[in-house]
Length: 337
Ligand code: NAD
Ligand code: TDX
Image 1 (cartoon, protein in one colour):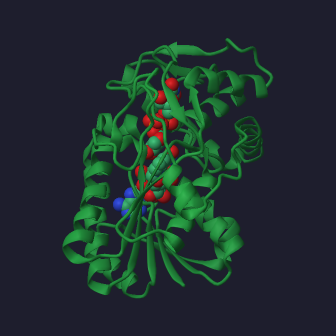
Image 2 (cartoon, helix red, strand yellow):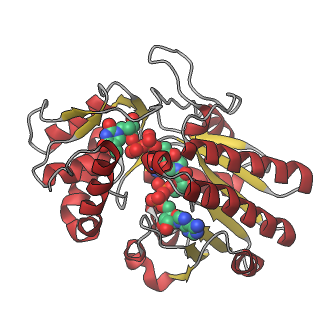
Image 3 (cartoon, protein in one colour):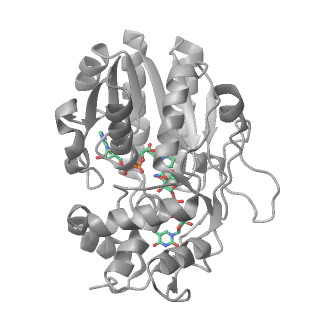
């Protein structure tokens, strides 16, 4: 199989490429990535020899068309992915997430290529803390942030291309990922690298918000299950029953890093901050037989901390700039400055 992976120099895409090279030597991988501030070619260094890399933009219709024409399938990870950044400047989100997805859809339509669309549970809005329900494939869309609104738009474009043009597409909506190669602007790596730098973790609001954590390898094994065995036109929710409040996560990071449990700061909240996400992955489990392999959060978080300790050379160049962006948003001094 010749597989085009967009966003393969980002967090989840790079882990997907590593896993694919490791487990499926018959798959020929081409990565298309614009190398934005969130993309880093060095994420692919361990598999450099095994994959082709194209530096380019998913909104470049001629480039995309040429690459899709030479592929049997496309997995689309490329996106602007940071909620906080979308609140400052939504335009790159509209361009990459909406226009970029449309560009890919037109190309897979023209060449009859199988397409898998990687999306998020944030399209469903949020749940109350005590709500017994979780998100399912039939939960109505209700995005809160510019980021999630553009991801919701891209999902709806995929559905329209399936229905109107017969495109062979599937969609996955996954909960919060963690693991190696995640940008230091995201919650877990930000707090791990703060502690390494002797800086207290920064928790928004009261830290009561709940995210449904899944290890990136489990997300990617689900993407493979859907690509190989998923029904065309269907959406699958991906999650590993990992609901935890931000306070709980930060307390565990502190414990695993030998710090006192209360050694974090509460800082001004994110505007429109979604309270709780929770995924019901019954369809993925029963229809495709998928199971998470890294569901022990404590163990997988400890391994992630060890990875950041061992790979400072990878994250260090991005750290100060990420902290300056956080500070610019709330008018404070960058932490660790
Ligand atoms: P990321 O920000 O780490 O990586 C995004 C990658 O896309 C980067 O390599 C970047 O250079 C590339 N990119 C951005 N704009 C591009 C463009 N115009 N053309 C080509 N490449 C471009 O993001 P991530 O966390 O790895 O997320 C990957 C996908 O998974 C996204 O679609 C995101 O919405 C989705 N998702 C993420 C999570 C999560 O917890 N991180 C959860 C569910 C779904
Ligand atoms: O410093 C922080 N302090 C804090 O309390 C940061 C960066 C975040 N938070 C909170 C906000 C959220 O409740 O932690 C939680 C997780 O925040 P992010 O890592 O920014 O993720 P989130 O907004 O939940 O979105 C993530 O999951 C869904 C990804 O970034 C998206 O791309 C994905 O679609």
